[in-house]
Each structure stands twice: as structure tokens, then as C-alpha cells.
Length: 147
Image (cartoon, rainbow, N blue to C red; front, side, top):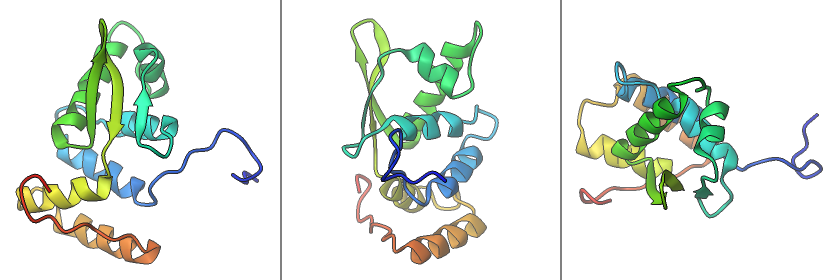
């Protein structure tokens, strides 16, 4: 058994992460699914929400992107995550993506729900709220476009 208090190599992730990946697939339909990139970033993050990207190619490979187009595909998916507000990115010298900040996904989802009526499927939203209630997660109230 994997007991996180007895084994190294674990990460704390949101219990609603599976719902967020389903939403990402829906939001990016036809434009490249960024869900594996998002999960890979969560697997590297520590509690402060920051990921230093030391080697973009390693991140791409871990998210399932390899070969000649692997790095380009990974960068495109990171940009999709940024466009939807799930991450903020900064370059590091010549490296396009050197720093990634994972934004609270509950805040991002709440903001998307408020700012883009009809974009989040009602069935998904109901399931998301039900699971949030089960785990005691509080969905932030969004009062303005900036949250």
C-alpha cells in the first residue's frame, strides 16, 4: 500500500482534480486536451503552488508528449491552461515556460462559471458541487471579473 506518511515521492492534490480534468477536456474540445499537462504539473507542485520548470522536455514527456512535436504540443497545452486561468506562467531566460503558478482550481472554476454562462455543462456543475460537498470543499464566491 502507498502510505504517504511513510513514503517519499507524494504530492498533495485537490480531491476535485478529476472533475477539473473532465472540465478541461470539455473546454478545450477541438483545441488540444491539456488535462495530462495539468495533472503532471500537480504531481510536481509543493504546497505553495509553484513549479519551477527546469527542463520543458522532461515535463512534456511526463505529460505524454514526445518526438519532434512533443515540446511544442506541451507548450500549447500549458498556454490553454493559462488562457482558462488555471495557471500563470513566466519565462526563464530563453526557456519559454520556466515558472508555473497553479491557481486555486476551485476559484478558477467559480470564475469561469460566473464569467461564461453556459460554457460549463449543468451536469458537470451538479456533479462537481456534489463532490465538493462530500469532501468539504468550499467553492469561492466570485463577485467580479477578477474574482
